[in-house]
Image 1: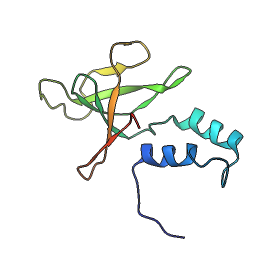
Image 2: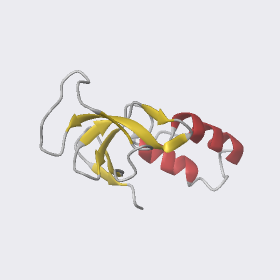
Image 3: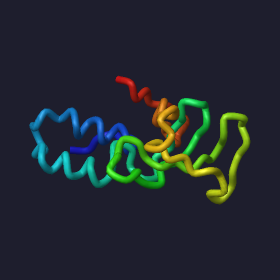
Image 4: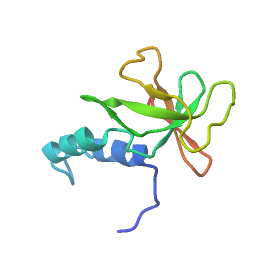
Length: 111
């Protein structure tokens, strides 16, 4: 069965919300542990308004990944990964506010 493509975060939410119909819960747990809720490459807006791209999970914290800043909260753009890398596991005051669809939409992660 074909379905409309979705961003990585949305695919993870759908997999977690499967309620064991199609996916073994142990396998889902391993996938989330390996990839995180926000797969590498996902675009996100941070709580300070900056925009970044997930580059990897923080040690033992797949829900608080490392995020290189692409556009900071002052609208400064950083080219070729020259922005500061924010480790959300270390910076407890910062969090992911939204997953961003590269096609222009945003997904509310507080659902």
